[in-house]
Structure formats: C-alpha cells, structure tokens
Length: 142
Image 1: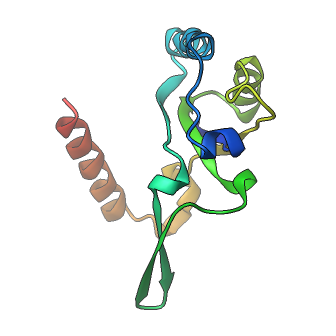
Image 2: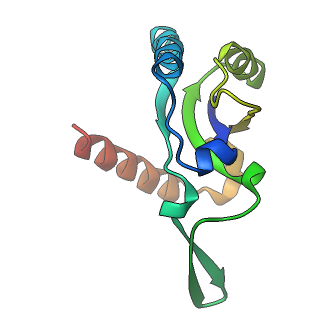
C-alpha cells in the first residue's frame, strides 16, 4: 500500500525558518534508511503558504486566494510517499523520524487509493487510461 505522510506546518515553518545543519543531517540519515528499506518513493519540503495560492471552486466559478493562510495546524510543511505493507508499518516508520520541525510537530499518515478501492465504477477502459497516463509520466521523468 502507498501512504502519504504529511509533515504538519507550525509557526516556524510558516515564517520560512530553514532547518539547521544538524536537523538536515538527521533527516538525511532518516531518508537514507527509508530508501535502503525500499519504503520511500518521494519526499519534499514545501515553502511557506505566503509563497502559495489556493484555487476555490464553487460550481463553475474559480477564485484564487493568495497565501499566507491561517490555521497553521491545518497546513502542510512537507511530505513523503511511502510504499509499505500496512498502516501499522507506516506508523512505525513515522515514530522513527527525527522531529521534523525541531518544535512541537506532527506527521499525518493517509493511505493512497488503489485501483481496487474504486470498485466497478473504475471500468477496464478507465484503468487502461490510468495505466497509459502513469507510463507517460514515468517516461517524462527519465
């Protein structure tokens, strides 16, 4: 199963405070463990919301809202995509993580939908389309 691990933002990350050399080294070692174990598929840190935007949908209308955004505890500072056997395995990996912000912080774990989760609505034609798109994306990254 794939799991998306969100690193929740805090005041420090939203102010754009960069990690120390020691924090970067600890996270680098942790990422190395994830890669060697075949768990890490991707992972990145995110700029603060002051550099971002949201697009709000209401029927056919689109509204752009420029950052920064409030409610820091609901914001994301970074993420990983992990390939694990279960949510319990993802939890164990998250517990091994060095504190991602050096302060009070949180990692949220969310399973990624798999094709079988969509049931009959995900027809063979739609599955074939999904596979073609994945192959195109992979080819573009090489």
